[in-house]
Image (cartoon, rainbow, N blue to C red; front, side, top):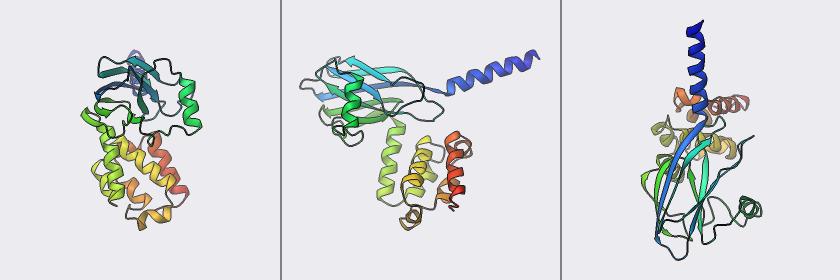
Length: 223
């Protein structure tokens, strides 16, 4: 009985650890005109958890965030960075800009979408963070860029096969199946939903997101 209890304690501890992600995010700004503060904001809501909203004063031309965030059962969590002269911008003000479509994460130049991971960025212009270069870490962000390039070049299935055990591949396949017309996938040389799912690793297929993807494919009789 004692052995079983100890095993359960370890199992629960491992489960809890799997629900969080540690991140270390650094950035260097090459041309700093008036940026005095860096902001890190979680993108999307985690049920029952507060938003991630961190503000750090710039250290000369650089900034640094580190911490732990809740994953709520997911494999990845996205966030975005922006720089500003002010250090008193509130989370509600940020949300209002996004809700009113003044800011669009992934589209507005002053916002840089990232994954919560270990990453270092080289930023040339504080008003245009989109072209920021990855100088260290950032494997998930780089894979996300590679996925977009693969879609443009119509070799998405090859990308999934190459990154079969990456959460990014699972995330991109899930979005592809959800947002792109199923009949159009094969026509665009992306492979069928069934082929994309089959290319994923056994580990990813056994996750909550992987199981939900399989159910969606089966329910819609997609092959």
